[in-house]
Length: 233
Image: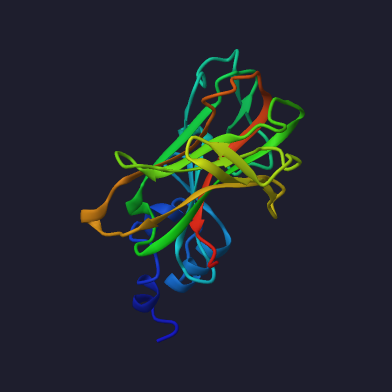
């Protein structure tokens, strides 16, 4: 039973054949499952990365910044699209100069595992010259489209003073970035729960936006937003 293709097929995403094409042929569904646990695959014309969490088999994805809605993102005076070897995507977004910082990504909940608590993280680097993010709290939003989103404050500079930020609804925790094993930085934007099932298919939006202090900024490089099962607290 431990080697049965039928057994291991139950652990694979329903669209697994499209996830691995045109990857090397796997001899069994067990090999394919193990591959998805260790090696992210690109789908959606290379704009989404998908893999399975080793411990649980839950689906994880990263949305490329190429799939984002970015304020002024199509204007080369403010953002440019560059290739860097350490990114899993062909292009990443580099901020050249803006005052209004607003980046958001969307995905459908059906690509994720049902009955699962997820966390969303924005994955980024700072260029050699990075300005405008020190001591600057930016609002992060996560929620189903058409519903009230959860909100928190984040900062792209881990050296910011304080653990809380005052907002319209009182003091909120300030979430700081942490370093990833792959050398990038990440900040948790928020959490959400996937009910799952075709009837519960919805779009979820995640992003970071600045709505108050519109000071100049540059030098942030954004790879994407990663969605993975939330840590048990």
